[in-house]
Structure formats: C-alpha cells, structure tokens
Image 1 (tube, one colour):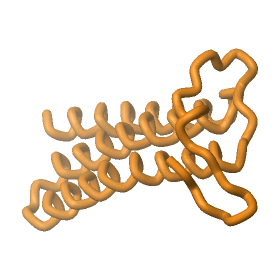
Image 2: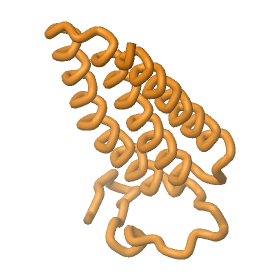
Image 3: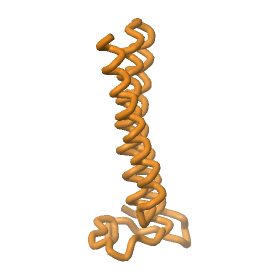
Length: 119
C-alpha cells in the first residue's frame, strides 16, 4: 500500500519535471538554454519515473533494467548536449541578446578554408 503511494508520487514528480523540460524547450530564448532544460530536467524526470517503476515492481530484473537505463541516460545526455552545444558554437548559432559570457569565444577557431578546428 505504501509502496503504491510512493511510486505514484514519484511518477507524478517525474512527469512534472518532464513537463518543465518540455516547457523550457518551447519557452527559452536560444539553443544553449533550451539544451540545458532538455537535458537536466528530463534526465531527472526519467530518474524519478524509473525509481517509481522499481519500487512498484520489486523484481530483480526490473530493478536491474531501471538502473541500467538511468546510467545510460546520465552518461549520454551530458555528452550529447555538450557535442550539440560545441557544434552550434562552431556554426555560430546566434545567442540570446542578454548573454554576457561566452567562454569559448576566443578559445576555438574554425578554419573554414581547410575545415579544421584549432582549440
């Protein structure tokens, strides 16, 4: 009985964080901030939902699969967002006009003639 309530609460919280991620992707002003919303909030929402599934179905293979999926998401989401952000920066995707700090501005040069990246 109590495990059903805990899993229900975790599912609702996970869905809430997924909703926040979706709203962030729609509402934030540029690619870089949208990417932050898409990776952080949705990863946490997926974590909460998979923990809820593990609590609701306390079977070894369900828990193992949930842990493996959580590890996969938490390993791949930051790497993917980093690569997308780096390529967007190289392609000079416009930033929000209120962006004040660009730490990569003078650190990465793209040689358009030879197609090489100097960092």
